[in-house]
Image 1: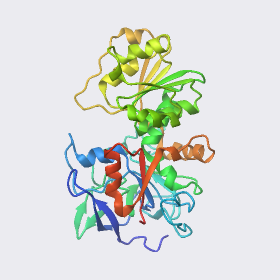
Image 2: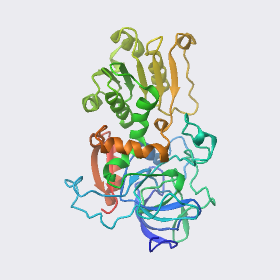
Image 3: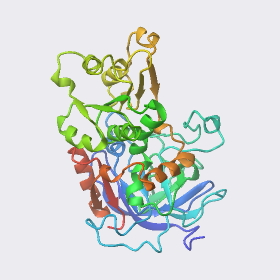
Image 4: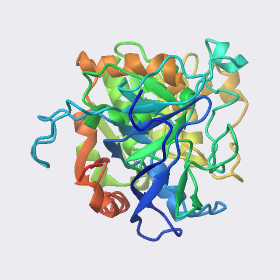
Length: 400
């Protein structure tokens, strides 16, 4: 066991004290892990739009003070970010710092990815080969405490600091449920594979696990943010012959070419529904579509632009709570298929290790998603980059 096991650790964390206000680097106390929990040393984390959304607290019940972050890892390969940071020796780094009672499949020193959703391996969803929506550990953005005892593991001078989606990786140390931790190949560079903890796996899995395009088929991707680009990467890896990117922001089109997008459609350029435009481009519709915006209109367009008889549309984006999806029933009766997906249908503990191996075997590319890197002391710059639209993924080095 680690020499700090069972003890409170004091470390730096980026605390959000108010909605939309810059994060503040504070010294926090991190309690030891309790039953079925692990305490992790975070070496790299990246900023996802979900962090920004809940930091802004638009349309949600604010829960502050809070430590955000949910894409992270802990091993540094000295060659990978040399252009941003000086070399770093990883010989004494441990990602799993200590484990609580009942944890048997992880031990100090293991390299892992913490994940915002979990896999208890005991509920009906975890036993099902068709679902990854664990009854116990599926995402809960309103819960700011640990499941085990309803308490936070973070505090400042005795004042509790709320968790975020069970991960809170904007801290040098964090505590998470063991079911939300995927043990991975220790040779994987975590400054790269940390992005697989959320958005990239979500988009990539939506295509390869749910849409399942066949080699030579056509795929439309609605929304060319990080998740949409990951969906396009999935289509590229699957051998799609045409990948049509649909987005209202034309500045995204050039970047999307790196992810296999071959054609671009901006709905604002046409005076007819974009699904009609795509149907005319593809002799009746695309074989597969993946929607990654959260816009109900985009969802409808994604469904109605697939070819009758065999077309499959997959919805990834999260709509506003009062939105409603409306389409004519004949679109279903004409043998189009509409599917939804959560985290790309990946079971975190069972499946993420194999996704990491895809990267290690050069079957998928991650470097092109990483557009920026900053030291932990400049974490607010990562927020500025995402809000300005400059960043796909910004890596935050926790020791900087």
